[in-house]
Length: 244
Image 1 (cartoon, helix red, strand yellow):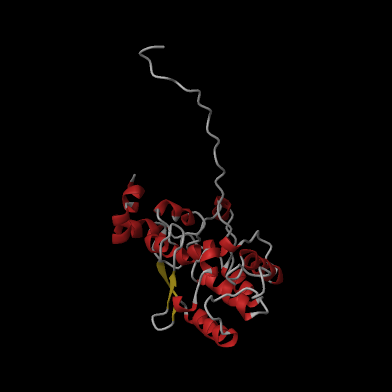
Image 2: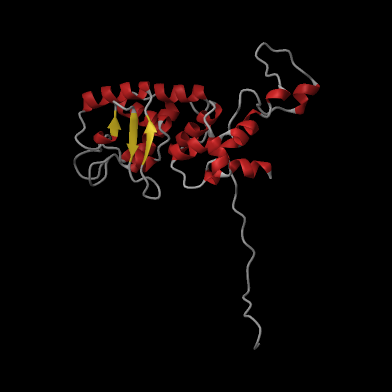
């Protein structure tokens, strides 16, 4: 009709499932790192977990990207074509030095098979399928029953750092997230030592255990106070978001 804006038939949007990521415990990570028979696979798992890398970022690592003097790894052209630096642990640095001395890789840290595509890409990088296979085999040998994927190690990296007290903005930068919203999901899975979730039945029927968790009301707002006082959190707008 003339004088009226056109109205289109709109269908209701389908809500996406919101699932929390699979995260390994520290004991499970230790078992996973101890499981591989090949040093190459142990170094691969160490990089995925210890540096929070995506699968393609681990496959793209070259020897010049590893800076043993500054103890950092240069992650080149990650998601969104962005570079970033992530710290190297002393344990992982030792594994890398041993692996490089033994395997003597020319360019790519993880090479596939030199002949054709069997086990590697056209440029002889370790294939995406090969990375997934190595993780699944290590998980099987470590008797981990969780639905583990390569990306689960990245989730575990972020969750463990949050539990260790690193601020959420720094974790965002280490992961290479462009938005803080993507990092906030780890607040739902992290287990803080002083404020671990518990059932009201635990206080209704207290069980005396030597290692039982006691709820400290004075410490229950440690994370909230940190967000309100941390300059990075204030600058990012997270403090304002919390006060709403």
